[in-house]
Length: 358
Image 1: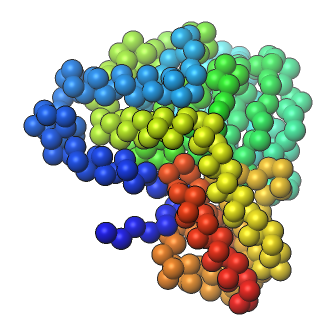
Image 2 (image 1 turned 180 degrees about the vertical axis):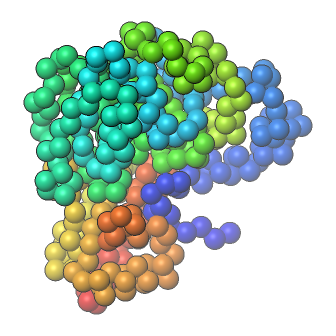
């Protein structure tokens, strides 16, 4: 069996032991004689998986009883629209903090449904940094929206802002990578395909009090209350993706929970950032040090010729996914939870070797 060092930005690496577990259960899931992909989402066997995944996520993140956990579809991109559909309008305003391309996309959807105020402090520096504060928040906004980690530019909120208005966060690329205080947020959403599992399922964690303000005049599928009342089973959910997510959550529990995962992620990021910093004549990191992402390390090389050589040699060594996003170019190493520390070690060693030779 050949396994590469997978630094893809998403869909991303999954834990090998989870893949092996899924392989063992693929044909006959726990004695049912069926794959999870084949069974009814109304069956007691699938319902157990569904509820188990919710319970694990609650334990790992410390989600209080007055928050709902939903498994939806449509990715973060649907949430960009679904949130303002439900919570803007009727004279309400929202504040969007721009820290990268995905926060821009969220803003672009929100302006269709209501008044949007923008904090664009980070744009002037080319999205290299994260703001220290949000001075526009006077407590009168329906919500303040942030993107917790910026995959394209490689920045991350080191600490989350304390807001006067309800805080909404797109955590698609760093959920479950470190402990968080869920009660600081009114709503959290995240596509699964980076840290939680495979593509196809989107997790929403929302406070009951915030959900009570939803727009009741929307189509059924676009109202959060629809999914709350049906335990995310109003229509057929992405059952196989939820099953794999449950297995990934169990794997995180076996690692020791989010404190252990955060330390593991810190080690991986430090290995790669230290390689960049050791060779400033070759590697040019994008993010300011205080805003460096633990999930996505973005950098360029001193010339386009060197960059092409680096990516070519990296591919020959079995490193996958190091090319930067098409909109900005450069290089990017995504170090999500499932990427082993050993993979980061091998990448850092290669970077040192490449720098010495060039």
